[in-house]
Each structure stands twice: as structure tokens, then as C-alpha cells.
Image (cartoon, rainbow, N blue to C red; front, side, top):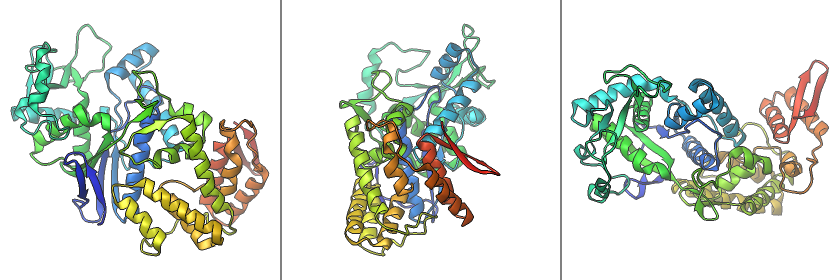
Length: 469
């Protein structure tokens, strides 16, 4: 393969060579499901959706695992606050997460494991770490990882134990032998009868956060896999601790490549709940259509900071309209299923591939889309218009009916008009023709485009009617 990826662990581009020829294995740390997802979560989901799409477009069979943390201090606190069970809260928040992800055109991972289902795997790993002298049970019942017993600790984040020793001036908490140690198993506390807990060889309790991902990745991808990804904020301590746990058990490198996407910022300050400057995906989608939000994220490189503002989103909207205008300028556009792309077909395909093969370089790939759109506007060439749509599809873009997208922008709050301007009856007729021709992909796309505009179709024996959601 010609793909190179920036690996955080070596701080350089490395050629991507899958462990198994023709296959790629990818693990991404997912959401802790106690509230609605915010724009930072959207960036993680979109960034690695693009990664898995490009791996597939490169001819690889992809096993993509993105976990769900459904047991955590914040989840327990929120469930108690709401007066509902942990399961009721997490089921509801997972459904909301899927709704947001679906709106942004994010393809579902191959597997989406829930941490609660893998507690036995976590206990096996903790037992193995204890047997190797890498874990110990303290007087308060917690089982902790002995960081100083793992010589490679700090290699991912570039933090040496000497640098981390500044923490030793702080009192050792929670029965830890060393301030650097972290919890693997939290002993159940008598004063907290409502907390979630499991039976274990270490007594009643529940797993620490870090051991969850080690157990799920090993269970679903094996002791070694190709790519581990997540947000830059997880590099330390979460991913550092994952390495210590997994490699402490197996003695093998956990992942070949470690990828981290950059932060989303508001006024050049990291977007976070603690600062109160975050926006949920749901809030952003009230003002801007989902494809504009996806395009806004994709046209920045995944490792660079992404500065959020309405002005930047309006600019993204205008840029995306220019691409759709090129598609709308030709008749007979192929809006059916995408055919495989011949990457050596012409200068456009070669440039797109070269950009994506250099660390998933979406800014360069988007630049190719605009070059291709300019060519379509100049020549009116249908074959190149179809290629524009195909290349956009690799990024999860340009799959809507062009006229529908161009007419529908006003319904998302980015102009002063409250009317979508869409000829709904004409689109219903176009959908009926698509269904009659067994082009169900186009029929479904028209339904989804109208739903994004707040228009719900209702099919019956008498025909199709519509109403506003």
C-alpha cells in the first residue's frame, strides 16, 4: 500500500502495512453515554469514519470497533440525579448518539461493544496483571496498576517517569502505593449502596475506565491490531494506560499505529463541558444542515485544531453549495450506487488518492473536488460530474440530490427565510420513478433529504403524502 499515517507513538509518518494482508483492524475510543454528544464527539466520529472509508476505498476489508462506555462515575451520578436506572439512561443516550451520527452520515462501526458486557474479560486481564506483578490490591479493596513496574510507561505521550514524579509531592490517594498508579478495579463502598457492582475475585466492585478498552480491543481484535484512534485528550493518561495494561499482559505491541484527532476550539480555546463553551451536535444541527457540519469538519486535517464559529460554518455551507451547483449543472447525473473508482484513471483521481494516502489528507482531497467542479462548470462533462459525486462519496459528501440540497439550505437557520423552497411534490414524483426503476438507493436518499428538511413522507396504498415534522 502507498498509505502513510502519522503515528503518535513514533511522532512521524509511517507506511501502513496491515498485520493481515488485505485487511485492516481499527479500534477507536467511543462515547461515555450520559448526555448528548457535542461537536468534539462529532469530530472524532467523522474523522475515523473518513479513515475507515478510505481504508475500504483502498481495497481493504475493515474491522472497525468503536466502543461505548456505559459504566462510569458520570453515568452513575446522572442516573441517580434523573431517578432512572443506568441501563435506561445509557440505552436512551445511545439512541440519541446514533441519531446524531446518522444525521452526519457516519457509517456504523463493524462492532459497537458496550463495556458492561465485557466485565469478565476485564477481570481476566486484571488477574493476569496481578500474576505478573503489575497490579496489587490495596487495603481499601481497590486493585491498582503498578506503573513503575512497566518500563515503557510514557512512551506514547512522551512523558518520562522523572517528569511525572512531580506528582509525588501530592498525598497518595485511594490506597495507592504510588501517586502514578491507576485503578483497575474499584471496590464497592458500603456508603454507596446504589453504585453498580459485580462479583469478582477481588470482592464486589466495578472496573476502572482504562481497563475497559484494553479488554474490548483484545476480545474483538486480538492482542495486536493495526490502528488505535481517539481524541488528542485521550493520549494521556487513557491510551498510555491502555498500553501499560494490554502490553503488560501480552508482552506484544498493542497497535501498530496510534492516531489522535485535534481539538475543536471556540474562540481558540478548547471546547469542553468544564469551560461551558461547548455545543451539542443537536444544537448545531438546528442552525446548519448535517452535510455542512460534516464538510466543515472534513475540510480541516484531522490532526489540526478546528475552530468553531457560525461564520466558519456559513463559509462551509457556501463552499458546499458551489460543489452541488456543479453537479446540478449537468443532466443525467448518476445518483445510484457508486462504482469502484479507478485511481489511476486521470489527474483528478491520482491527486485525490495522493492526498488521502498522506495521512488521510482531506484538505488536499477537498481541493481536488473544487478543481473537478471547476472543470465540470467549464465543460459540462457528465463523466466528470459523476466522478465528482463519486469522489465526494468517498468522504461521505455530495450524495444528496443536488437540486434538493441547493433549494433546502434555508430551512436550517443559515438564512432569514423559514421556508425550505423545495418542490416536495416534484421530489415525491422523482422518488416514485426511482422506486419503479428499482433504484431504491435514490428513493431512500430523497426520503432522507426531505426528512433533513423537516418533511416526513407517508406511503400508503393511495400514494405518498407528506407533512412537516
